[in-house]
Length: 324
Ligand code: UDP
Ligand code: MG
Image 1 (tube, helix red, strand yellow):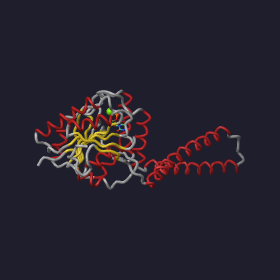
Image 2 (tube, protein in one colour):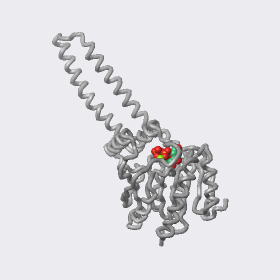
Image 3 (cartoon, protein in one colour):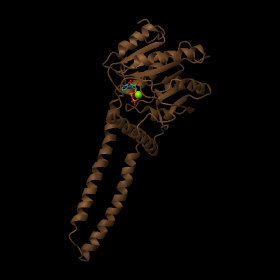
């Protein structure tokens, strides 16, 4: 039997692009249904991430126009990762497979066919991987590539050039629901669930309309969170560094005592300053990194909800009834 697919689409202030891309998604879904690749009960699930513009109104009117469109709204803006999670957790009880994709048309929707084929071939997770980064600036390409290398060095298993365009089966999502962490970095967490996985390749385009919500500062935050949420290697590196500095210090002390005993002590202002500055800087940096982990632990212990759904375009227990 054809699997039921839910396409999960996070939307934050997307009134400019949603009217352009929504019909494209619907077309794709209907074609897949006509080709009997997915079942007729498949849906496009928009997640309004606390938008301040008319995004939620657009989603509601889409839901009224076609039963394949459904939507949920978060009580406030929580960020892309939380919005995707809210959608996936909502979808997992109603479908067999989910595909998460951004709403700006950057990711090629035609890659969905192959994702579904791979699912039918036995893969529970199918990562959408960008085949090239021509549309990116040199700076973005360079930083992104260095970042993936750094992630891997830190022991985080992230698929190279994969963002959040991926197919996940409901079965995997049921297991993923037991990952309760508040600091989310989905592309690094999903591989931890296990199950057979593979990749499909696609070309990423320019945004069709509107503006990116990921300025450099937000990108850096996500990048930093990605490492500290999934790896404690930075703390190990600090420990390793501390060991080396301690050994050097002992050699230094030994040397200083010998110099003092043999009466050869001279005014070593420069060398002293260098050591003080160096140690001062590195100790502060190390404290900062450790503090980052302490802070994350603090936030995790509160175990606050990761998303709060305030509205739905349908009855929670009957997603097929779209009459609301
Ligand atoms: N998004 C979201 N919440 C946010 C920021 C972004 O749900 O706080 C959504 C946004 O609507 C889009 C996706 O996340 O569907 C990716 O955002 P964007 O295209 O701005 O990022 P970029 O592709 O430039 O990295
Ligand atoms: Mg985008």
